[in-house]
Amino acid sequence: MLAARTGAAGSQIAEESSKLRKQAAFSGGSKDRSPKKASENVKDSSLSPSGQSQVRARQLALLREVEMNWYLKLCELSSEHTTAYTTGMPHRNLGKSGLRVSCLGLGTWVTFGGQISDEVAERLMTIAYESGVNLFDTAEVYAAGKAEVILGSIIKKKGWRRSSLVITTKLYWGGKAETERGLSRKHIIEEIVRAMTHVINQGMAMYWGTSRWSAMEIMEAYSVARQFNMIPPVCEQAEYHLFQREKVEVQLPELYHKIGVGAMTWSPLACGIISGKYGNGVPESSRASLKCYQWLKERIVSEEGRKQQNKLKDLSPIAERLGCTLPQLAVAWCLRNEGVSSVLLGSSTPEQLIENLGAIQVLPKMTSHVVNEIDNILRNKPYSKKDYRS
Image (tube, rainbow, N blue to C red; front, side):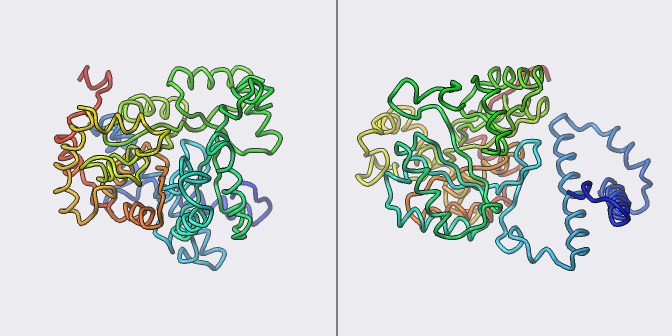
């Protein structure tokens, strides 16, 4: 961190950084505007709270870019040396923490240790890593612990720098015995917030978050952490796709603004429903054909499932117009939400992963007009209390 430097060099950096902050804060205005007028213009604008937050997010992004360019120049480097530049993979902060994660991550649910071989798993991780992905997600329950082992073995084999990776895992369903599951100290070393604080203080993890928790539970965890001087969660893992929107679009934004909890979302293709493979039934090689995924098959063949397939057919012309596939459109739609720190992809073949990673190229095309078109087809946009009051 720049603030950690001391002495003459440190004071010079602090002075230059201060200048850069002033420059970045007002760089959005025209040349003939004074800083005072620019600030007044922001205050007097009729932007909604969400619009103001987007402006602040863009200002912070600009500030990071200016400071990064200055730092690279100081070290006689250029942005061409960074992974984000060479791969084109955007990175975002995980909530309001300082942790930078690729906006697309690779998940291991169902695939690693189950649906695919270890060789295919290695190929998928290699494609993701070389495409700029630094976030890899797993859990102790995935394939009864095999997914974690495979993930670690591949990282060791490839010799990737551990500092270049963000590995997330989840605890709860650890084993069949009563002492091997849950969130007790016996299982993850006291009660949740205290246990996670202990794990971080021991150096076993850098941050902690929640998965499939309600907004009330997350807020309670934050309150406990603040009351007893412990470490609060920084993110929530939530399901988010074209047909599942309420939590990520209504509940989590309020938590982000209040306590800084970000969103890491999973299943952008709704367990493959949005991939288009189920338009004419359930293929034998698909996930829904697996014995343990009977619930998914039932969802697909249900009346609601048929309605969803019809909506996907209506979305296809939009994808064609944008020059992308339907899965790429669906992933880009998730990424267009600035409250989402990272979208976890789940792929069983290299071809699927490469296709889904292509959503990065579609993201700039997700204009407000395109998003409104999609909303008019889906007709499931959730509304917050503020929307009803207005």
